[in-house]
Every structure is written in C-alpha cells, then in structure tokens.
Image (cartoon, rainbow, N blue to C red; front, top):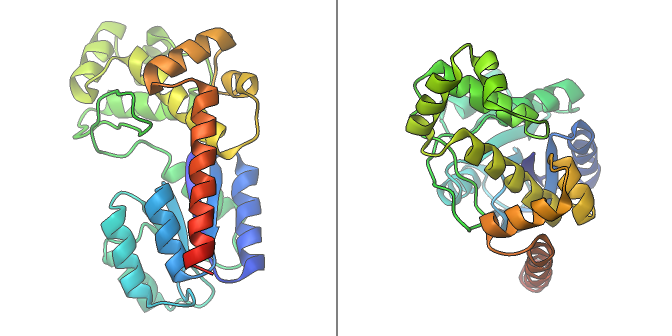
Length: 262
C-alpha cells in the first residue's frame, strides 16, 4: 500500500482527493498540507511514496518547491494537480524529469486509481533486509521473469505465495526463477515476500486504528503469534512497540508544526 501525501490549499479539494485514494484501498493518505512550508516540513519527516502537489500552491514558488521536494526525496512520485494547466505547461512538467504525472481537476476516480497502480510496482534502488523500518527494492533489473514476479508479489502479497505459483506466473522453472531472483534482487523469494508483508504491516500500524490481529490477518498471516515474532525479528521491535513509537513521533511533529507553521 502506497504512502500518499496531499499538498493542496483548498480544503474541499483535499477532502475529495483523500476520499478517492482511501476508497481504492491501494494507498493511505498519511498527511495533508495547506501551504508550501508545511508541505516541505511534513514531506521531509514522513517521506511519502507519492505526493499530490497543487500547481498553484499558495505560499511559495512552485518551481522552487518541486526542486526542494525532489532534492529531499529523489524517488518520490510527484503528481501535479491543477484545473488549468496549458498543454505546453503539461509537457514542460513531464519533460523536466521531476514530475511523474499530471492530474486535472475534478479528479477522475479511475485516473487516481491508475496512478496508484502504476507507481505501486517496486522502485529501483537496492537495500538489503535490515531491522530498520525502511523498505528495500531491487536494482538494475534486466530479466522479465523477475519483474513479473515482483509485480505479482506487489499485487498478491496478502495471499499464499509459493515458488511453484510464481514459476507459473513467470513461465520459468522454480529452480531457474529462484536462482535468478536471488542474483538480481539480492535476497531469496521467501525473504522478499516476508519483507513485503512486514513493510505493509508497518504502514497499517502507523496510519490506521486496526488491531494487531487485524493487521496480521490483512497482510496474510494466519497466526498472530508468528506475525509478532516475524515482525520483531525483521523490524527489531514488537508491533505494539512500533505503533507506540510512530504515534509518539507523530505527536512530536504535530507540536513542531503548530509552533513553527501556524
């Protein structure tokens, strides 16, 4: 599930877009910003996967704002929202390489869902599994079977996934797929699937009120006890401790925002 931030100075527009995103169940709106300074502060701290940014955001220069965001978060998928972009402006934005897509108001539900689908496929930077609560992704992918396997895992991580099933999806033998995946991604298929489940569990623990049992079931664990053990081994703390940690961080950030960004 994608972590989404909305930067829009009109309250009703923010609410409309948030409602559409949440309804897709493919993204979680982790924060909203009403002006440029707030956008930069929240983006720096919360590091969203996707940021919907109003082209005419009040309170700052758009070009400078985009530059600052991409400097802080080079891999963020930046979607420009506007009701009146000219064709030339639209082309310039995409050609700049800083913007992933444009979205015109009023927001079409299908267009928003398509954007979430498009950018839910793993990005290309490599990090090994660690106890830090940051995701890792494969780098320099060249083979179609590995790309297909990753896309399938992204869409079906909640379901029982086996090497045999993924071999059928990719049209390669289990032995060949397993060796190729480990070579290109750096970890085994089993490790990657587990990491994906734990990554999504972290988002749910941080951004929803679902119980630990509900989170466990949602990401595909049939045994809550096993989920808790796997979570602690992979993340370094228990699910309950993780939620408490993130809630404390959020409360601290809210205090800072209120003081410095009224």
